[in-house]
Image (cartoon, rainbow, N blue to C red; front, side, top):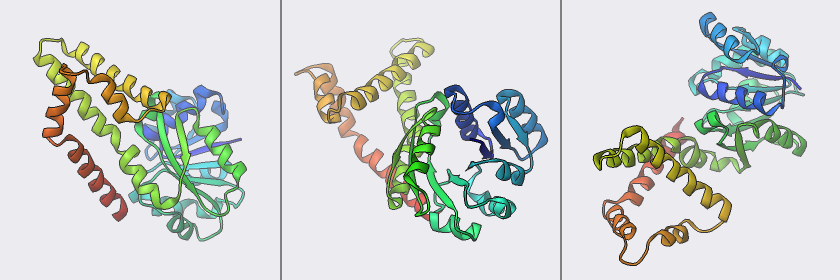
Length: 264
Protein backbone atom coordinates (compact mmCIF):
# COMPACT_ATOMS: atom_id res chain seq x y z
CA UNK A 1 0.00 0.00 0.00
CA UNK A 2 1.34 3.41 -0.99
CA UNK A 3 0.54 6.61 0.88
CA UNK A 4 0.74 10.15 -0.45
CA UNK A 5 0.77 13.39 1.53
CA UNK A 6 0.21 16.62 -0.37
CA UNK A 7 1.53 19.15 2.11
CA UNK A 8 3.85 18.21 4.94
CA UNK A 9 3.63 20.86 7.64
CA UNK A 10 3.35 20.06 11.34
CA UNK A 11 0.29 17.85 10.94
CA UNK A 12 1.46 16.08 7.80
CA UNK A 13 4.87 15.45 9.36
CA UNK A 14 3.26 14.05 12.52
CA UNK A 15 1.14 11.70 10.42
CA UNK A 16 4.08 10.48 8.37
CA UNK A 17 6.22 9.89 11.47
CA UNK A 18 3.38 8.02 13.16
CA UNK A 19 2.85 5.75 10.17
CA UNK A 20 6.56 5.02 9.88
CA UNK A 21 7.06 4.40 13.60
CA UNK A 22 4.10 2.02 13.68
CA UNK A 23 5.48 0.02 10.76
CA UNK A 24 2.28 0.41 8.73
CA UNK A 25 4.34 1.49 5.70
CA UNK A 26 8.01 1.66 4.74
CA UNK A 27 9.75 4.87 3.70
CA UNK A 28 9.65 3.66 0.10
CA UNK A 29 5.86 3.36 0.29
CA UNK A 30 5.33 7.02 1.26
CA UNK A 31 5.65 10.09 -0.95
CA UNK A 32 5.20 13.68 0.18
CA UNK A 33 5.03 16.98 -1.65
CA UNK A 34 6.10 20.38 -0.41
CA UNK A 35 5.73 23.86 -1.85
CA UNK A 36 9.41 24.81 -2.05
CA UNK A 37 12.69 23.06 -2.83
CA UNK A 38 14.13 24.11 0.53
CA UNK A 39 11.34 22.55 2.58
CA UNK A 40 11.52 19.53 0.26
CA UNK A 41 15.14 18.85 1.21
CA UNK A 42 14.46 19.48 4.89
CA UNK A 43 11.55 17.02 4.98
CA UNK A 44 13.35 14.47 2.85
CA UNK A 45 16.32 14.50 5.22
CA UNK A 46 14.12 14.41 8.32
CA UNK A 47 11.74 11.67 7.19
CA UNK A 48 13.65 9.68 4.57
CA UNK A 49 10.57 9.22 2.38
CA UNK A 50 10.14 9.99 -1.30
CA UNK A 51 9.59 13.69 -1.88
CA UNK A 52 8.66 16.05 -4.69
CA UNK A 53 7.24 19.50 -5.37
CA UNK A 54 4.86 18.00 -7.96
CA UNK A 55 1.44 17.37 -6.38
CA UNK A 56 0.23 15.38 -9.38
CA UNK A 57 3.17 12.99 -8.98
CA UNK A 58 2.12 12.25 -5.41
CA UNK A 59 -1.52 11.78 -6.43
CA UNK A 60 -0.48 9.33 -9.17
CA UNK A 61 1.76 7.38 -6.77
CA UNK A 62 -0.62 6.97 -3.85
CA UNK A 63 -3.32 4.40 -3.13
CA UNK A 64 -4.39 6.50 -0.15
CA UNK A 65 -3.93 10.23 -0.62
CA UNK A 66 -3.93 12.73 2.26
CA UNK A 67 -4.63 16.37 1.41
CA UNK A 68 -2.69 18.04 4.21
CA UNK A 69 -2.61 21.65 3.00
CA UNK A 70 -4.42 24.63 4.54
CA UNK A 71 -8.12 25.01 3.60
CA UNK A 72 -7.53 28.05 1.39
CA UNK A 73 -5.30 25.99 -0.92
CA UNK A 74 -7.67 23.06 -1.46
CA UNK A 75 -9.31 24.31 -4.67
CA UNK A 76 -5.93 25.04 -6.23
CA UNK A 77 -4.45 21.67 -5.24
CA UNK A 78 -7.46 19.66 -6.37
CA UNK A 79 -7.36 21.41 -9.76
CA UNK A 80 -3.74 20.24 -10.10
CA UNK A 81 -4.47 16.58 -9.30
CA UNK A 82 -8.07 15.84 -10.33
CA UNK A 83 -7.11 14.32 -13.70
CA UNK A 84 -4.72 11.75 -12.16
CA UNK A 85 -6.90 10.70 -9.20
CA UNK A 86 -8.68 7.49 -10.21
CA UNK A 87 -11.76 5.94 -8.63
CA UNK A 88 -9.91 3.15 -6.82
CA UNK A 89 -7.90 5.62 -4.71
CA UNK A 90 -9.01 6.88 -1.30
CA UNK A 91 -8.77 10.64 -0.84
CA UNK A 92 -8.55 11.98 2.72
CA UNK A 93 -9.08 15.64 3.64
CA UNK A 94 -7.87 17.10 6.94
CA UNK A 95 -9.31 20.60 6.37
CA UNK A 96 -12.04 22.16 8.51
CA UNK A 97 -15.09 23.46 6.69
CA UNK A 98 -14.61 21.56 3.42
CA UNK A 99 -17.62 19.24 3.13
CA UNK A 100 -17.77 15.90 1.37
CA UNK A 101 -20.12 17.46 -1.17
CA UNK A 102 -17.74 20.36 -1.83
CA UNK A 103 -14.77 18.03 -2.19
CA UNK A 104 -16.69 15.83 -4.63
CA UNK A 105 -17.69 18.84 -6.70
CA UNK A 106 -14.10 20.05 -6.89
CA UNK A 107 -12.91 16.69 -8.22
CA UNK A 108 -15.86 16.50 -10.62
CA UNK A 109 -16.03 12.71 -10.50
CA UNK A 110 -17.14 9.90 -8.22
CA UNK A 111 -14.37 9.15 -5.77
CA UNK A 112 -13.93 7.59 -2.36
CA UNK A 113 -13.57 10.61 -0.09
CA UNK A 114 -13.00 10.69 3.65
CA UNK A 115 -13.15 13.92 5.62
CA UNK A 116 -11.16 14.03 8.85
CA UNK A 117 -10.21 16.45 11.60
CA UNK A 118 -6.98 15.47 13.40
CA UNK A 119 -5.23 17.44 16.12
CA UNK A 120 -1.65 18.33 17.03
CA UNK A 121 -1.18 15.71 19.80
CA UNK A 122 -0.70 13.41 16.82
CA UNK A 123 2.87 14.74 17.04
CA UNK A 124 3.33 12.61 20.18
CA UNK A 125 1.10 9.77 18.93
CA UNK A 126 -1.81 10.82 21.17
CA UNK A 127 -4.03 12.45 18.57
CA UNK A 128 -7.80 12.35 18.33
CA UNK A 129 -9.41 12.29 14.90
CA UNK A 130 -13.02 12.43 13.77
CA UNK A 131 -13.87 11.10 10.33
CA UNK A 132 -16.87 10.94 8.06
CA UNK A 133 -17.13 9.27 4.67
CA UNK A 134 -19.07 9.52 1.44
CA UNK A 135 -21.30 6.78 0.08
CA UNK A 136 -18.53 5.17 -2.02
CA UNK A 137 -16.31 4.40 0.97
CA UNK A 138 -16.70 0.81 2.18
CA UNK A 139 -16.32 -0.64 5.66
CA UNK A 140 -13.05 -2.20 4.51
CA UNK A 141 -11.85 1.24 3.40
CA UNK A 142 -12.74 2.68 6.81
CA UNK A 143 -10.90 -0.12 8.60
CA UNK A 144 -7.85 0.43 6.39
CA UNK A 145 -7.71 4.16 7.09
CA UNK A 146 -8.28 3.70 10.81
CA UNK A 147 -5.44 1.19 10.88
CA UNK A 148 -3.13 3.61 9.06
CA UNK A 149 -4.00 6.41 11.45
CA UNK A 150 -3.68 4.26 14.56
CA UNK A 151 0.05 5.01 14.55
CA UNK A 152 -0.61 8.59 15.59
CA UNK A 153 -4.26 9.00 16.61
CA UNK A 154 -7.43 7.51 17.98
CA UNK A 155 -10.27 7.75 15.47
CA UNK A 156 -14.04 7.89 15.67
CA UNK A 157 -16.40 7.69 12.69
CA UNK A 158 -19.12 10.33 13.07
CA UNK A 159 -21.92 11.94 11.07
CA UNK A 160 -20.72 14.81 8.90
CA UNK A 161 -22.90 17.39 10.63
CA UNK A 162 -20.74 16.87 13.74
CA UNK A 163 -17.42 17.60 12.03
CA UNK A 164 -17.47 21.26 13.04
CA UNK A 165 -18.08 20.15 16.62
CA UNK A 166 -15.00 17.93 16.35
CA UNK A 167 -13.03 21.01 15.32
CA UNK A 168 -14.11 22.78 18.52
CA UNK A 169 -13.81 19.90 20.99
CA UNK A 170 -10.71 18.22 19.58
CA UNK A 171 -9.07 19.98 16.64
CA UNK A 172 -8.67 23.36 18.36
CA UNK A 173 -8.86 22.34 22.00
CA UNK A 174 -5.16 21.56 22.55
CA UNK A 175 -4.69 25.34 22.52
CA UNK A 176 -7.16 25.71 25.40
CA UNK A 177 -5.39 22.96 27.35
CA UNK A 178 -1.97 24.51 26.77
CA UNK A 179 -3.29 27.79 28.14
CA UNK A 180 -4.58 25.97 31.23
CA UNK A 181 -1.22 24.26 31.76
CA UNK A 182 0.61 27.55 31.31
CA UNK A 183 -1.66 29.30 33.80
CA UNK A 184 -1.18 26.57 36.41
CA UNK A 185 2.58 26.67 35.90
CA UNK A 186 2.62 30.47 36.27
CA UNK A 187 0.82 30.15 39.59
CA UNK A 188 3.28 27.47 40.70
CA UNK A 189 6.18 29.77 39.80
CA UNK A 190 4.53 32.53 41.82
CA UNK A 191 4.48 30.08 44.70
CA UNK A 192 8.23 29.54 44.39
CA UNK A 193 8.57 26.49 42.11
CA UNK A 194 11.17 26.61 39.28
CA UNK A 195 9.43 27.07 35.92
CA UNK A 196 10.65 23.88 34.25
CA UNK A 197 9.48 21.85 37.21
CA UNK A 198 6.18 23.74 37.27
CA UNK A 199 5.45 22.77 33.65
CA UNK A 200 6.21 19.13 34.47
CA UNK A 201 3.84 19.06 37.45
CA UNK A 202 1.05 20.87 35.58
CA UNK A 203 1.33 18.87 32.36
CA UNK A 204 1.51 15.51 34.12
CA UNK A 205 -1.54 16.41 36.19
CA UNK A 206 -3.50 17.11 32.99
CA UNK A 207 -2.20 13.94 31.31
CA UNK A 208 -3.05 11.76 34.28
CA UNK A 209 -6.49 13.32 34.72
CA UNK A 210 -7.35 12.77 31.06
CA UNK A 211 -6.20 9.16 31.32
CA UNK A 212 -8.48 8.64 34.32
CA UNK A 213 -11.48 9.81 32.28
CA UNK A 214 -10.63 7.50 29.38
CA UNK A 215 -9.64 4.42 31.36
CA UNK A 216 -12.10 4.43 34.27
CA UNK A 217 -15.18 5.38 32.26
CA UNK A 218 -16.31 7.46 35.23
CA UNK A 219 -18.09 10.79 34.79
CA UNK A 220 -15.66 13.74 35.03
CA UNK A 221 -17.83 15.25 37.77
CA UNK A 222 -17.52 12.10 39.83
CA UNK A 223 -13.75 12.11 39.41
CA UNK A 224 -13.67 15.78 40.45
CA UNK A 225 -15.67 14.97 43.59
CA UNK A 226 -13.11 12.30 44.52
CA UNK A 227 -10.47 15.04 44.82
CA UNK A 228 -12.67 17.46 46.77
CA UNK A 229 -12.39 16.48 50.43
CA UNK A 230 -14.78 18.15 52.91
CA UNK A 231 -13.36 21.49 54.09
CA UNK A 232 -10.26 20.78 52.01
CA UNK A 233 -8.08 22.83 49.68
CA UNK A 234 -9.46 21.55 46.38
CA UNK A 235 -13.10 22.48 46.93
CA UNK A 236 -12.02 26.04 47.67
CA UNK A 237 -10.06 26.17 44.40
CA UNK A 238 -13.10 24.76 42.55
CA UNK A 239 -15.29 27.45 44.18
CA UNK A 240 -13.01 30.18 42.78
CA UNK A 241 -13.01 28.63 39.29
CA UNK A 242 -16.80 28.47 39.35
CA UNK A 243 -16.99 32.06 40.54
CA UNK A 244 -14.68 33.22 37.76
CA UNK A 245 -16.82 31.48 35.16
CA UNK A 246 -14.39 28.81 33.99
CA UNK A 247 -17.09 26.53 32.57
CA UNK A 248 -18.83 29.41 30.83
CA UNK A 249 -15.58 30.69 29.34
CA UNK A 250 -14.75 27.28 27.87
CA UNK A 251 -18.30 26.89 26.59
CA UNK A 252 -18.27 30.31 24.92
CA UNK A 253 -14.83 29.73 23.40
CA UNK A 254 -15.96 26.47 21.83
CA UNK A 255 -19.17 28.08 20.57
CA UNK A 256 -17.06 30.74 18.80
CA UNK A 257 -14.77 28.09 17.36
CA UNK A 258 -17.80 26.17 16.09
CA UNK A 259 -19.26 29.32 14.55
CA UNK A 260 -16.08 30.12 12.62
CA UNK A 261 -15.64 26.50 11.49
CA UNK A 262 -19.14 26.48 10.01
CA UNK A 263 -18.31 29.57 7.94
CA UNK A 264 -15.11 28.17 6.43
